[in-house]
Image (cartoon, rainbow, N blue to C red; front, top):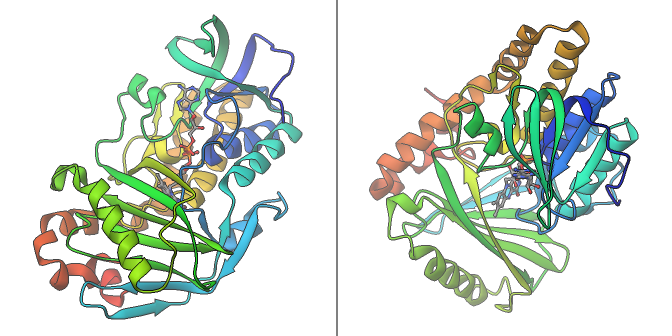
Length: 358
Ligand SMILES: Cc1cc2nc3c(=O)[nH]c(=O)nc-3n(C[C@H](O)[C@H](O)[C@H](O)COP(=O)(O)OP(=O)(O)OC[C@H]3O[C@@H](n4cnc5c(N)ncnc54)[C@H](O)[C@@H]3O)c2cc1C
């Protein structure tokens, strides 16, 4: 995928960001017959990977993008509590290669008619005039009737509409060799993992081992030392070889439901804070949110009525609102009561029945 193409200056919709939210938004809008441009600041879609690469199995059925990116199936999730007790939940899932997944979604958007400009960042917006900057420095403008911000946790489009993420979890991850293949994802709670958790997600002979914490709840340096300790623990337990082949880091929104539509602007995926506030899972939400945003944007353009964009926010809230609100309330409780982790964890983690009770 080159991203090359003839640049037209006027678009119905410009999508900022070619992650799962942006590609899905572009695909659904372009398939409704409007002119769509995706701009992505990175030179290659999906690289570097900043993800533990788990998706729920049913997501595959929602997409028509093959399964070349699937590395292994998982039966469910094991949750390991600080006292060592384990709880297994059966939630069939897939471990994927996120780079190939994101690329497959982009190809699908291009097949539907969207243009893709790589190495191009959205810089500012004035009315319908969107200023873009190519890697290397050239600035140029395009016109957009609607702009969809699918530009990740530190969204620039969100700044233009004064709707940004304010509760972010810092995450680090290493890819390590596994001692034995595993059939479940594993999630670890520990007092040292302030406001977050550790994960061991298997993918064939390797695993993504990572840690997310609320840096504002503890000494920010703890992330580096805690991941080292976590890798040593998993090595002692005979699960992994402590020989990282690569490392990555990133930010995960943990937000209350908030405004995702203003004027001609929409937000989707991490830019909209649609990530689950407790689990940090966001790929499914980005795909679904992106598809909805693209559909409503195309409808508003075709009807020449920007007020129709409000339909996106309503549909998102109908679909995800309750789940998201519950997740955010549990997030507040977990942060407040972190010192009493043992007592509150069942109320605050999705594997336990208590989580779903009011
Ligand atoms: C360490 C880690 C592990 C995770 N593990 C999982 C997991 O296992 N399962 C899961 O479901 N979720 C996971 N998540 C969350 C998941 O990765 C995100 O929710 C998902 O990537 C959101 O997709 P998105 O399209 O909204 O944003 P992104 O994937 O972040 O894509 C945004 C894109 O916008 C581009 N961009 C940004 N600014 C501009 C600009 N100004 N102009 C042009 N382009 C721009 C970026 O380069 C990027 O490509 C994890 C996150 C982290 C950090």
